[in-house]
Every structure is written in C-alpha cells, then in structure tokens.
Image 1 (tube, rainbow, N blue to C red):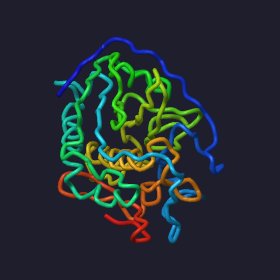
Image 2: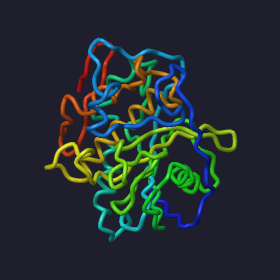
Image 3: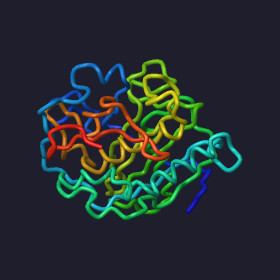
Image 4: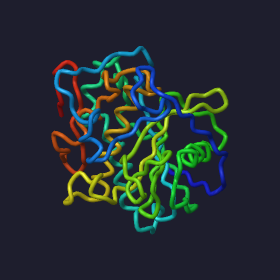
Length: 278
C-alpha cells in the first residue's frame, strides 16, 4: 500500500542521556557505526561476550512502515527502483531465515508475519541537506498523519542521496563528521512509544558493504541491521552486551556482509552459538 503526504508534520525533541550501564550511548537512539568507528573499542564482534537481558521489551510480531522522503523515491524518480527493492526486501525478510535466530532473545520476532511491510509512505517534499534527529522524528509523525502508532511497528525513514543524517555532531555519509551509517531509536508522543530508524543513503566507502553491490543491496544491510536491533532492543533497555553492543553491532562488518539471492545481509550475534551466525 502506498501513501503520499506532502504537508509538514510536528517536530519531536531528541533527549540525550547515558545508558543505564554508563556506556557512551544515547538512551533514545543506538547507532550503527561506520567501518572506521566499528574498529575502535566497543565496536565489532566480541568473542565470548554474549548479550545480556536487561529486562526491557522486545517485539514479538514486528511490522515495518517504510517512509521514503524526497521526490527522487517517487514514481519516475531516480531512486524509485531502489525504493521498490527496499519494499521487496521487507516483504520477504521474515521468510528468508534471517530472523530465525532472534526468538532466543525473549521470543523476539517469534510471531513475525510473512510480510513485515505494513505499507509505504512516499513523501514528495524535499528534505533538508542535513536531516537532524528531530527532523526524522517529525517525518515519522508526518507519515502517521494523526493516526495512532502501532507499538509493534518500526517506522523507517529513508533519505535520498542529496541528504545526510546528523545526530549531535556526528553524521552519516555525506556529512562533515562521519561516525555512523544508520540508527534506530524510540520517542514518546501523545502517550505512545514510537519506534523508528534513520536510514541514510549509502554514499561513502565507510558504509558500503561491497562496491559491487547495488545501492538497494547496501541499504538492505542497513535495513537488516536496524530492524533486527529494533526487534531485540526496541527501547534500548533489553538485549545488549556489557559494552552496549546490540546483536547486529557485534557482527556488523566482520564477518563480511553477504548476499542471499538479490538481497544484502549481515551476520547476527547468537548467544546460543556464542558467535556470529547467518
């Protein structure tokens, strides 16, 4: 189902705070580090360092709303084929086997529908070059258009090549201070806890999984990473290790991301296996 909105939504404030275990993390957002930052302390796979259940909720029956912000995503636009690829990725994600390891984490994704894509929203307005976290949250509210959010849905905002994401002084590809490729988080509005993600375009070597992949396949890697982490740690108080790494952080770039058919994926940390698994 395609919905198109072009009116301006209400801005939502970002709240900065340290995680309960004092890791240097915003308690409302969790970032997927680019390759350079993944190699620093706290990034990458940690052998024999399993995830710990901190007691927060997980999503048992996850759904996704894909929000494509910018005219290039729309029919006839330069990125429309990539948007259709992203929709197809979510349409097969739950049946691809790449969620199969998640139920070990408090039954996360144990009731995932065969098609996780609830619907798409195509916003044909032009986003700013620098898309702040407040702007991403406002875009989610705009897409909701006054409707109540679904507590099991992740609202994922995809940015065009002409924009980059910023969160504080850190940015995604295209910005002046590359530190992350994408992120997921949550915010409160009208008494609802809204799960969302910022999905910038993969336009730099630090966030491209493989130079031979299409833009859509590199975005699949972001989608795989952020969606699974939102499922297992929706409010950033559930499953992560002693350094604050969520399941996909621990295997983000090593072993190498891979293709399964026409879609891009990465390995996932499994407590049961004690390592990264497909």
